[in-house]
Image (cartoon, rainbow, N blue to C red):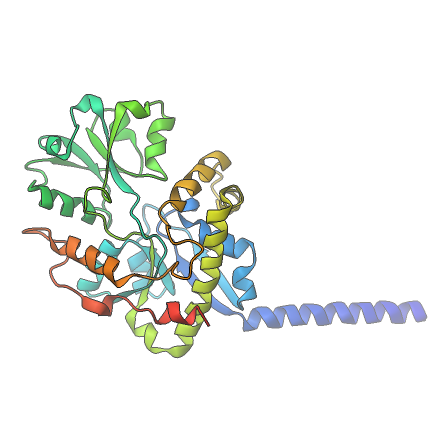
Length: 336
């Protein structure tokens, strides 16, 4: 009888613990965040925060939705299928001008990783050599920095330069279909090198160095949501935990790579590639480990707006959105 009683007590305790766990999960505040692309070190901070329990410790139940070639983060947000999205500022501001009121609540990358990578054999040595050449460009919102750069150079797309709508691969350069292609320093550039092209046979043009860079991976929400104090507080917890994840990822690229690989359902991500990618991503977060990490500097925002407005007859945006396109309310809430 005593054994039965002990088992009963143990069973009751187990049931109680399970009930408490379920109650905790029920009370956890849900957050859905849409990534810009598939699981990779570009988004390591989010996956690290999830894997190491930072979101859970903050009382959050976070769903990280991977992106892909057929996923538009803006459409996902506009359709209320996510609370926040990771997006580039040119696309976000263009969407805002088109009627989707996106607002930047945190800026993870403070430098641009975008570049044009060309084969020296194509005859391209400086931007002046772009004229008459075929250049690979990503679309779906990623074309805006390129179009702005061409306008600055005085080149009209499909007249002075031929624009090749580039897929999310490096085939056009490898197969000599284009003199230059769009690459990121943490991803496609290394795909070219891994394919057997020597770095000494390449010439690269960083948007950052050419003075036409715009802010890339930031967090955006719909403007109306920021009127709700509960939403601001919840997103503040999310940003705080996310920044913890990013700090860890920058400090320990090898650990971050393992977490990213584990989060990739396709199984295509490899430790070697993701660790290298994380080390390159870390160079775009110059304020990691500081109180300013994640803070959108107004001056950086204004520089991006200026770049996007300077597109000649076809600017990315036609009007300066002013301070309405960003908010520090969530960042400030993340410090509480």
